[in-house]
Amino acid sequence: MIPNAKVFACIVWIIPLTLLGCGGDLGKSASQLRLIGTYKLSFGEPSGIAYGEAENVLWIVSGNDQKIYKTDCTGVVLKTLSYNGEDLEGIVLDSSAKSLWIVEERKRELLQIDLNGNVLRSKYISLPGPLNSGLEGVAQNENETIFLLNEKEPGKFMELNSDLTIKSQREISFAADFSDMAYSAKEKCFFILSDESSALYKWTKENGVLQKFTLPIQKFEGVAINAAADKFFLVNDETNELWVYSLK
Image (cartoon, rainbow, N blue to C red):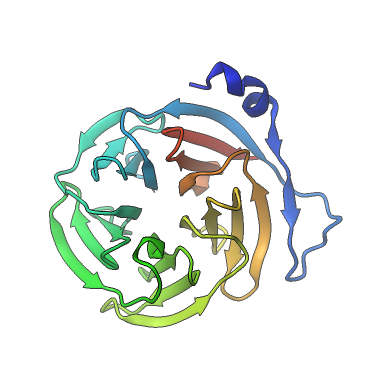
């Protein structure tokens, strides 16, 4: 749970929300994120997270042992998948709820795996820049379209065709880097996470950044959403913790 050193900072502390333009009123009263709790994970360097609504579970990527874990919503491990990664980052549960999409950063690879960890499909994504500044996030919308996020040099948001080729791409620069993203079918937008900027951004392709949620520390590497409950799940790969927030 929350260590003693973080009791004041994390239990009492509520993240203020700043509206960033695209028509937003900087003086307008806005919603806030409220910290529900933090949970220590039994594995190291969590770097990606996905939410499974049907089972109310999480799928979390470990950058330490390069494994994928199925957990409950407090991070208790329920299952370890057989897949062994090389530089695992983002993860999302397919809309069918029968497979997962994952990204390998250095290999510039998008893979579809079943819920036991067997590879069903893979695609190399040609990207410029340093190998350790590559693919960080993957998301899927209600139309089964896959989206990818490149960390930096350059920061990039990509939409894929059904054959996993790049349909469109754009450079993004509203944060120092980009560490993960999740799509909200409820709000028809993306929530994009930045480790170095210690922030979570509400963003759309049409209007850019709509809102900014400032986070208390750096090294948040993964974000998932339970839209029905207005909950965000974040993982921090330095503290090895799952942080749960409520949008209230």
